[in-house]
Amino acid sequence: MDDFDLFMEEQETEKEEFPNLPEELKGIDLNPDESEKLKNDFPTLKQYITISFTEDQTKALAELLGVPLLDPRKKNTYSFEEIVGANENGLL
Image 1 (cartoon, rainbow, N blue to C red):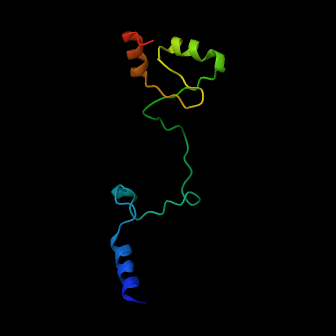
Image 2: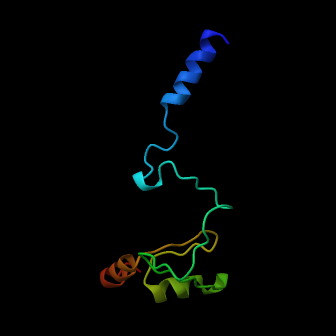
Image 3: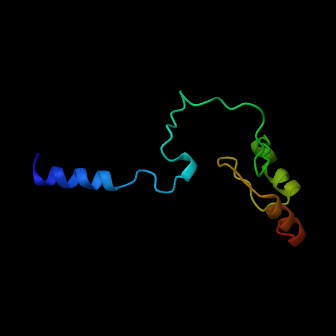
């Protein structure tokens, strides 16, 4: 083993792989195959809906939601506050 290999080995041992990992998860094996399966319903901070529409319905749906643009080739994500603000400010 040469000096470069020793240097690299020291760098690897000093560098923490996940420095922002919460304390309660440090040192725990997080292998999904060996982890306990989640049960029950876990609430999230936000709820989501998916609306399917045809390309010719794009403009009508944007007007109905009160948003200035929908691009059917991309994932359109708006917060509740954005939709309310667009409607209140007449951004159509």
